[in-house]
Image 1 (tube, rainbow, N blue to C red):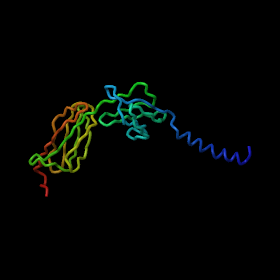
Image 2 (spheres, rainbow, N blue to C red; image 1 turned 180 degrees about the horizontal axis):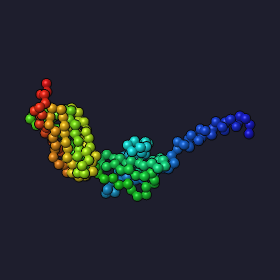
Image 3 (cartoon, rainbow, N blue to C red; image 1 turned 90 degrees about the vertical axis):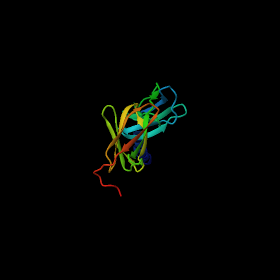
Image 4 (tube, one colour; image 1 turned 90 degrees about the horizontal axis):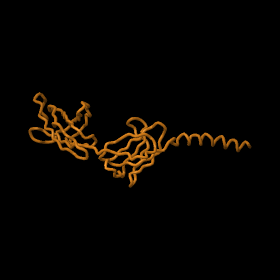
Length: 195
């Protein structure tokens, strides 16, 4: 082998090795459907790099199918608007991946005396098993719509400066539905009046 040819091969091998290291070890494919077996178009299949860190994402086609490059030992998160996300292994899925419709709520937090929206509200969602999700900042609107929960019973707890904490009572969330709730907060008599 001539000196020039040997140098070219030596320069090419590290580059080829780097390309091979970047290529995924396993590809994953599948079809995403709702519980009734209808394909979900536009669902996202994302390679998980860490528990809450998505890597490469692809969308499902008109038949709910996806092809995603994967990597050894990783998982894929399947997400679709109006459905609960699910994590699956990196394999070719021969059986459809079925998603459950999410349940949700729309809440308004208002002043008990005049019905005006309360600003700077922090909201917690309490689940039947005692888990607490939040705080969720409602900002100045005093309004929030969320559709990311499994069906079940929940309670909303709201807090805002100058007000006593309040709840919206129990909410029974149903799959595919939005339940409306209003939380009326009473002014805290010990707080300094606004203005």
